[in-house]
Image (cartoon, rainbow, N blue to C red):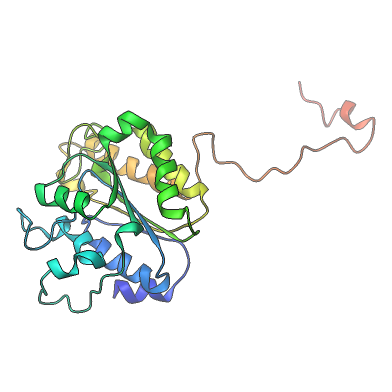
Length: 254
């Protein structure tokens, strides 16, 4: 249903849900409309285990393996998934924020030459350079629609505690906002997912509010809100229509 809905519409979409396995449907649907799309995957986890390598058995740790063409000989046919066809090549995706990667996932990333930036890379290069390299990799040869998938656990648990699989040492608020702002500035953002915001897992109302407000800030930045403030378009300053107007009692307020 989600796939058909996305394929029917071309306007900007945002999906705000709990489970990251949503990306299987949202990216598949997006690719039906834009087969040449690019994916930026912001997450603490790679979510690229196959059903044969997963240690947890959780589907939300496997979506990318179902989407990549290069892994299809490693993914068995599962009941109920006959509708799902691979729609991405390894050069179509870039990871940002990785810091909890399973052994099989690390093998896949390295041996299939998938571009990723771990938190160590962000520490080494800085978030500006990471975004420059991300866009160079995805957009260097052609401009194409961007699908942004954000797992809230990409952020440090101090900022986003109400989530299922928090991992310490994550993105700062400033790094996360910079990613969103830069994606918006490309003018190519077409669809975004923001997931794993789970109010049931907050230890207090403060933790729930902090996590939800952070997710809202990410969405707002993707829609164009900046830390300089969201302003109306201002093309030029007004000038007095007559020499006396600037001195009039109506115009001057002290």
